[in-house]
Amino acid sequence: MVQDNNEELQAGMCFSVEPGLYILNKGGVRIEDIVCVVLDENDELDYDLFGPPSPSLADPFRDH
Image 1 (tube, helix red, strand yellow):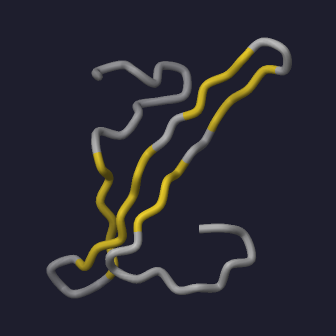
Image 2: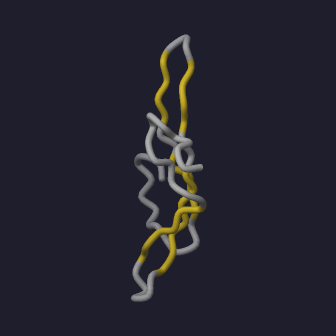
Image 3: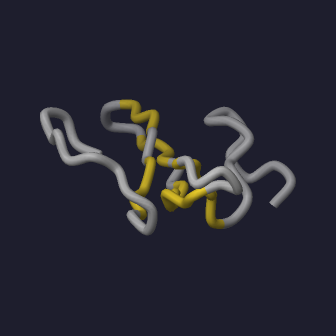
């Protein structure tokens, strides 16, 4: 999952999604979600999240 990578996603591949918000000289927050490509009941590509998704950048730990 990198710009200009043309490799097709396949079942069993896993990667992290890491959006972040940073303020220069102050700090920031990054949310890390792990995603795995799976096959659904129709043998089509789908995905699973490992662990609960973060609700938002503004409140990343709500409900955790």
